Length: 159
Image (cartoon, rainbow, N blue to C red; front, side, top):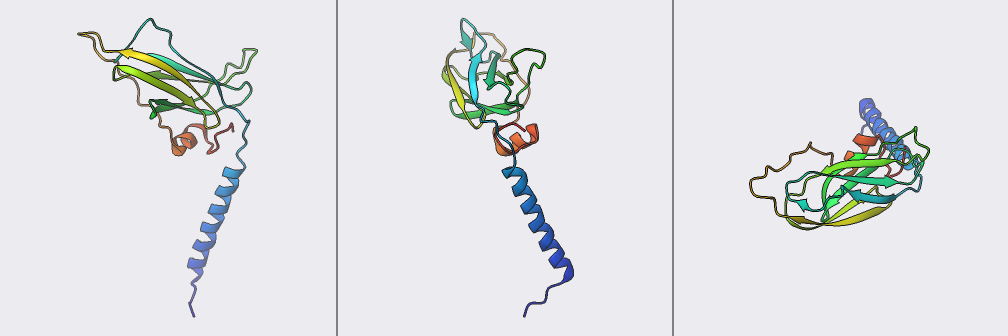
């Protein structure tokens, strides 16, 4: 026979309660069925390694706040929470991120909010001689923890 101590049972019940509460929060996270509807990169005649460019992803109108992860040739380069222009007639959540290509060649850029993705292909030229590569801020990552920390929701949809 196994003797159970009162503190041990309390910890067990507490852990079970925490797991159940977490499951309810994750399962109850609302989704708006939104996805990235458009994706663009700063318009430029030429893109250069070390240059700084902006990427912008648009999600479905009225989708609420979302988290969009950005990828360069399949590698996570960061993510951003959407923002909205509430005063504008069309309420389109938009995520922006600075992109600094580190290598020359073809780059397939992807914006993905977990429910839909769009890609843009850009050809990057080598850095011009004597140029100083741009440096940008450290971006949040593309994982679930980044999504939770930056939107307050573990779901891919709005919260």
